[in-house]
Image (cartoon, rainbow, N blue to C red; front, side, top):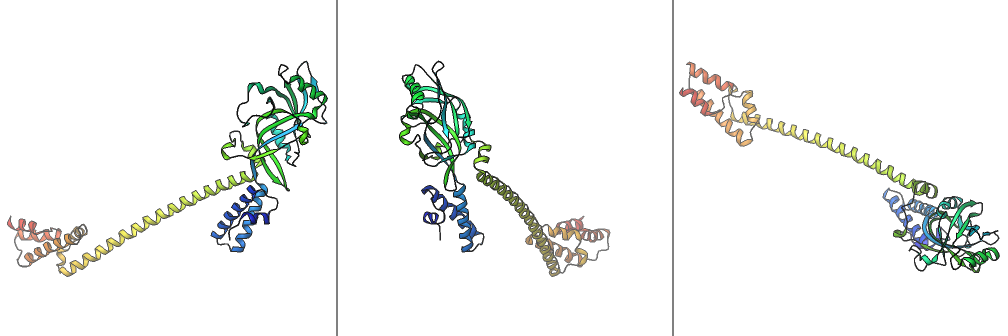
Length: 371
C-alpha cells in the first residue's frame, strides 16, 4: 500500500508539512523500486521507511530568513570623530526559536557581511529589490568571527537624518536598536533542531528600532521557490560541507550512468555479433539448399555425366529456378543432338569437346555444326 503523510508522522515525529511530503515521496519511490527488483512487500516497506527517515534527517532546504540581533550585554564603542560604532553584533549562534547556526556557516558568511550596505528600517516589499538612496545609512567593516557569533564595525553617515540618534542609542541604550537581516541559506534538521548549515546570500542589512520587544530577535522563515534560489554562487566545497548526502548521490548516479552506458555498449556489440553470425548461417543455409535443388534438378534431367561439368554447375548457381530450368533444357537439347549423330569428323569432335568444356546452349552448338 502506498505511503502517505500520515505514515510520515507515525514514523518520524516533529516533521513540517513539507518534510512529511518529502518523506512520503521518498518512501513510495523506494518501495516501488524494491518491488520491481523482486523484493517482498514486507522487505519493500522496511526499505522504504528506512530511506524516507534518512532523507528527512539529512534533508536541507533553501529558506529565506529575516532576523534581528541587538547588542545587549555587548560593550559598544562609538567613535564620533570617525563616525564608527565598533563591536556591533551581526550574527549569533542560536535564535530565539531555537534555530542553531553552525560555526562553518558563520565563518563562511563573514566575507559576505564585510562591506555589506546598511539601511534604515525594513525594506518596503521584496527585500531583493534595490533600496531607496534615502535609506542608505552606512556599511559594515572589520567583520570578524568570535566564539559566540559574527561581529563588526558600523561605519555610518554623520549627515544622515538618524545618525545622531543611532550614536546616542549605541552609547546609552544598545538593546533598543539592532540589525535586521534578509538572507538566504540552507537548513537541515539534526536531533530535532533546525540547523543553518550555510548562508548563501545577504540580501540586506537594516537598522531597526526596539528589537528588544521580541527579545532582540525575530525570525520569519519562508521556503524559497526554485526560481528564487541563487545557485550561481554555489560551490562544490559548499555542497561537500553542507550536503555530503547530495554529493554522494550525484557521484552514485554518475557512476551508475557510466556503468549503464558501458553495459549498453557491450550488449549492442554482442547483438551486432549475433546478427552477423545469424546472417552468415542464413547465407550458408541458402547456398546449401540451392546446391541440393540443383543436384535434384540435374538428376531429374538425366543428363550424361560428360555434359554436367563444374562450369555448368557454377552457371546454374548463378540463376534462379526459372533460369536453371532454361539452361538444363538447353543442355538436354545438346545431349539429344549429340546422341543422334556419330561424331567422327574434326568438327564433330570439336562439338563434343566444347560441350564437355561447358558450351551451354543450342546456339553455340548450331554454330559449331554449321561452320
